[in-house]
Each structure stands twice: as structure tokens, then as C-alpha cells.
Length: 134
Ligand code: ZN
Image (cartoon, rainbow, N blue to C red; front, side):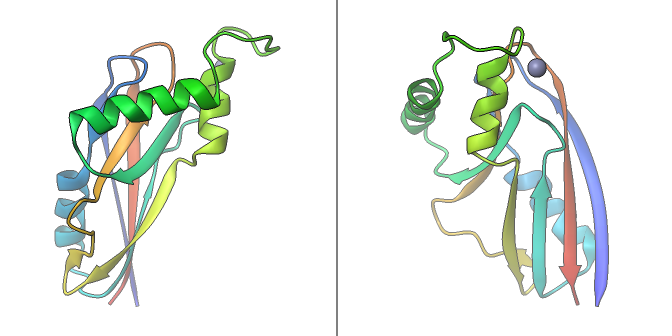
């Protein structure tokens, strides 16, 4: 069994920027040389989410509305400045695991891997991809 790890960084434009990282993750899976196993996609951030969903602008706006409904920006919070940012990424985790079959991510037709910025400022973000298999 082999374990291959690679990371990449990118900039976000603030809340609630959504960045499609599918191609970057596919490239890493290809470079790993692993044909069958799993890819773990992880954002080491307390105010970010990784989702698997359709990359369609209307749906991404619906996702923004959902986050606002689940954890409103305004509320009686205790943490200074960005409590809703943290609470959104407590509810929706910063990682996903996807099977790798025949050297490719086995995503469904309408599944893209996307990072959701929940923080209130533009940030530089990192994604760590670990591919495990043979
Ligand atoms: Zn904070």
C-alpha cells in the first residue's frame, strides 16, 4: 500500500466564496500513481467547508442561503468578529473522502469538489490531499 500527500493553496474573496477544486484534486490523484484506493481532501481551517455538489450558480446561491439560515451572520454570539463563520464549519466539516478507481476520482456526474469560504475576510487557503491505495 502507498500513501501520497500533496497540498495546494489559493485565495478566496471572503464570504461565501465557493471555489471548485475538482481539477486540482484530480491532478494530484494522477501524480500519485495510485490506481485504486481513496483520496482524502482536507482543509486545515476553522472557517472553511469542503462540499460535494453540482457546480451550478443557482445552486451555489441556494447553498449560501442555506448557510445563512442554518447559522445567521447576526446573532447573540460570544466569540468576537466571526462566530457564525466557525459555527458553519462545525456543522459542515472541512473534509471529504472519495474512492479512487482505475486512477480516477469516482465522482458522480453532478458531483464537484468545492471549498466554501465561511470567514468574513478574504483568505489564503490550503487543501491537503492524501491518496491511499495501490
Ligand atoms: Zn474566530
